[in-house]
Image 1 (cartoon, rainbow, N blue to C red):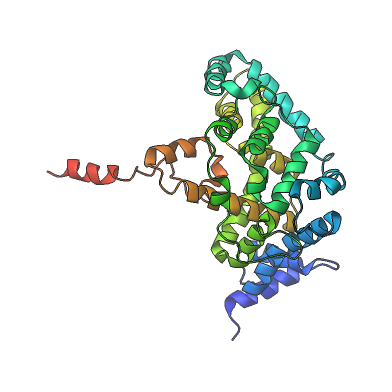
Image 2 (cartoon, rainbow, N blue to C red):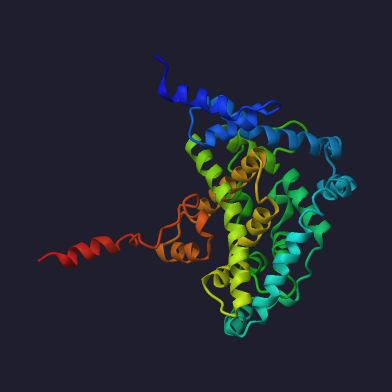
Length: 344
């Protein structure tokens, strides 16, 4: 008798297989639906877009210089790479900027903005990057690793997404008390893609696809799907609050994400891909897993108070992936104390 899970997979494939459908897209979708897709197939489906992108980057850049400067190597061909994708997000950027403008001008948030500005006095001195500049540094990080970019460039990219003169706590930390970014996000990739430096971010991402536990890949897949819905809903809900003249929790979430969190990057991506293809969803899943793994390593020694603050400024769809405490969970140590107090 056939295994029930295998029979379910056969039925699912019969319902979803259409002429011309990519078999790896089918594998990703079936895996996301909880069906028993062979592990080797799942990992190859997650890794394939990374491998293809790496090959495309290497083709555009040409052979890596043995002793040359990475910025020169990227810069010589960066224009051709960065031209792709700049147009599709222009409408998204206009929508985000419009919401930002209304919230910064709303009197109900005036006191909060003043407090945020006092926490980030360097905001007016930083020179934001244009779209081409942001993509250039993104390509440089992909090719050479985040350590090649450096905290100052990361801060400029963050400020560029927030807007000129807008307070951004993460950028402030990068400029004044930078963490060990490379140490947090690189733990020795087990796989090396041809034509790229060993420190390339793509080596690290493809290692996640080929080595991470399957349940973590599934959680990343579900989180990537939730991100697109979160981004669309948050935008629509904040726009409704602005139109009604009554700012609520959605507007507060938006403002906190702009000042304290990295939600802006995820908001842009979620709005740019409202109905992601299986390949896009897999790419986003790997990105989210990588970010969360690095953050979890960085926060390994943090106390419950710091983790609770981070939970409050993290988009809710990320709390499971980031292993953050839920509001209903007792702070470690408090439960034991409560038990003692309740004893007769």
